Amino acid sequence: MAANWKMNKNHIEAIHFVEEFRNRVEQKAINRSDIVICPPFTALRSVQTVLDSEDLEFKLGAQNMYAEDSGAFTGEVSGPMLTKLAVTYVILGHSERRDYFQESDEMVNNKVKAAFRNGLVPICCVGETLREREEGFTNKKVEWQIVHSLEGLTDEQISGMVVAYEPIWAIGTGKTATAQDAQDTIATIRLVIRDHHPDAADKVRIQYGGSVNPGNIDELMAQPDIDGALVGGASLDPVQFARILMFE
Ligand code: 13P
Image 1 (cartoon, rainbow, N blue to C red):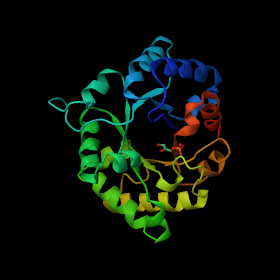
Image 2 (cartoon, rainbow, N blue to C red):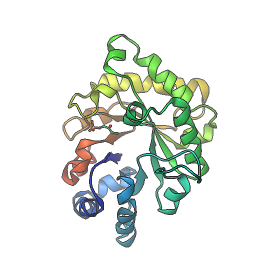
Image 3 (cartoon, helix red, strand yellow):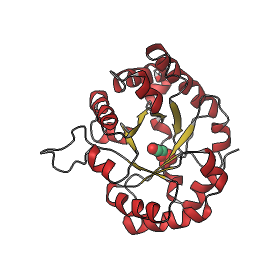
Image 4 (cartoon, protein in one colour):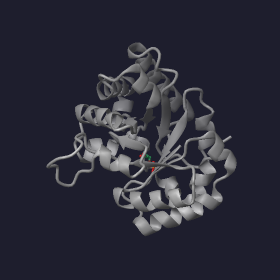
């Protein structure tokens, strides 16, 4: 269950969130889920310090990274830098990065490999546009993204990673895919993975993302193939995110 804050919260606000969230989140949620907080790069160190000093069991995630480990890549952040900060997860190929920053499947694939090289768990995002859905291309689109973004990975790597299915039209719009639509596409993703990595298909964790909130999480999590959620807007509020984690 991951909070993707996107480009929100400075490091002070991030600390306030963790302090409040810690008081709101129930032990049951901590026991049954891996809870991952993905702040912007500038707040990673502050959040890590709070998690460490208060011995909190939340995991730290980044929202992106570069595929090379070091070098002349002005403005980029590398896997080893994240690992050093006790980051354990990294969101890769989010639709906002694919769309606004022209990240191709090949770039995402290189980043996923770099994440594994550095001991990070990738959360690899896929999803279709509204037009692709309306024209009946949803399954083809996610199949293409899965095959190319995860190319060259081993069964073991896929087993240990996370895939996030985020229909682009459901992100930040208040429109959620119906739980059945989310289930159907996520089942397709698992099938595609089974074709290429039979032993990994039941182990890879697949999240749904797109306007997840306390009102729709129960139905989503009740679906057999949905293992978790990647939450944007609703994860900015500690009360809401804590409520989401209490899904039935
Ligand atoms: P929202 O929950 O704000 O729709 O964002 C979803 C998302 O993109 C998470 O990565």
